[in-house]
Length: 136
Image (cartoon, rainbow, N blue to C red; front, side, top):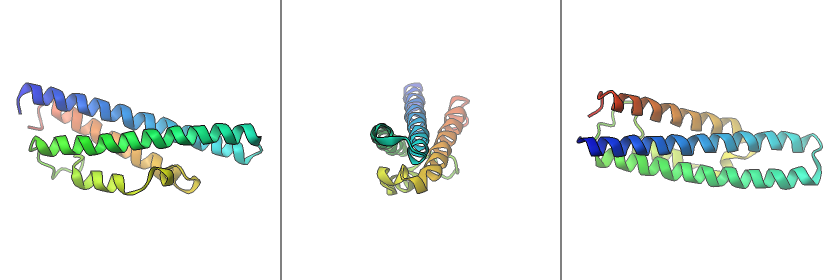
């Protein structure tokens, strides 16, 4: 892999980490407003929670798209995808299976948060190994 390809992949990793972190923040915020609404937040809290849920769904969709694009780039560059931390098409397909609406439902907020954080950890590990030259 030449320097430009490596730089492109590092940039894509940074963009993916940003997208995933934004989705994490929105999922957490949506969950917080959900709790507030349950304990008597009233109509205004329901409206605000609905807005937070839409933001979360949008950022989850962006993060899912970024995961797919990153996986495509990894495979296009011919990087070995046998390592457990690599985000490849198999991981991306699993990541894309659940609709965004389900990610932010009350029953799945913790799962969504864990899955998003796992993806961030994977990309950070991949990025660091790539930066140190341990991935070619």
